[in-house]
Length: 196
Image 1 (cartoon, rainbow, N blue to C red):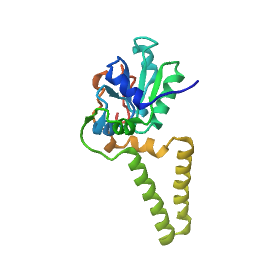
Image 2: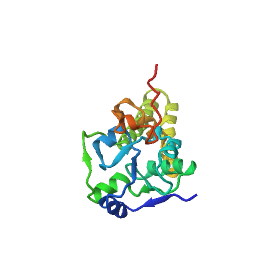
Image 3: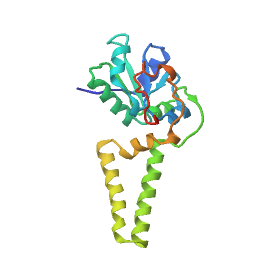
Image 4: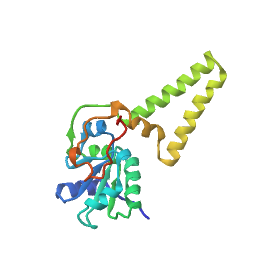
């Protein structure tokens, strides 16, 4: 099964033509709030329900475009959608970073720290903490730094990031979803993480 990407220049042309298509933004709600393409609906990757797309898709030829910050989460979302039999699914190459560089019009909101920066801050802090604890408490704490370093290598090789997936669920990365009451229509599982 091949994954399709669409260059940002071609995506920009389709946006200008006002083609009827679904654009799904799989970033965190706070990343989406900071800047997003006007027609995009926010369905965070961790809440994406591919089966719901099968029910609400108007036709099998209707394209679905997926966007994230730089392309990695978009690729994962496309894989999820394609595994359920959806076709005509496209990952916007380079994500929002490429769209902003290409000058596409975006809706801007409150600034936030991107998930990629949060991962770098958390990983760097853990490595530093491991070194300090190894020096001040016990040399075995160097294993913490080694574990984080190994995780970063794994993330780079597989283009998946466990730390990013954890940080995505943190309270500071949550806000009201742009999808609103139509979340199930857009393929979003209800959030049960805060249910009592």
